[in-house]
Image 1 (tube, helix red, strand yellow):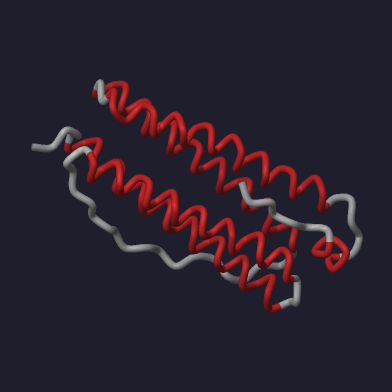
Image 2 (cartoon, rainbow, N blue to C red):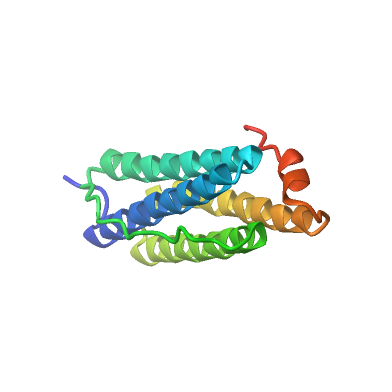
Length: 161
């Protein structure tokens, strides 16, 4: 017997797609950087992609722990033609704000459905999104201080937590 409503189960499956698409977005950005020999930025975005895939697996595990059903939905092709580093980092912040909105909608749905067992997971995701938005904002702020893309790349490092 499932201990997760069909409605929340489906919403989590949709969020899995959002997280996987996030990973694809960041892989595309990483490739753009790598093609331009901006290795530190490529690594930063590769790590970001891996984190997004881990988020999808966290949602998958929760669904299965609650007796639900996982359905992987089709992923959309993502933008791959960027004009500048600033365009990418601004798109990163915008995308993370989109994901934050989706997570909050999930939390509100869980509240409406009184799906208390999903609160800890969703609160973790809300806290994670604070970090994600801060990381993206920091990239924008740092980039504004550099005139040269290669100097900016040289000073980018992503610390693992």
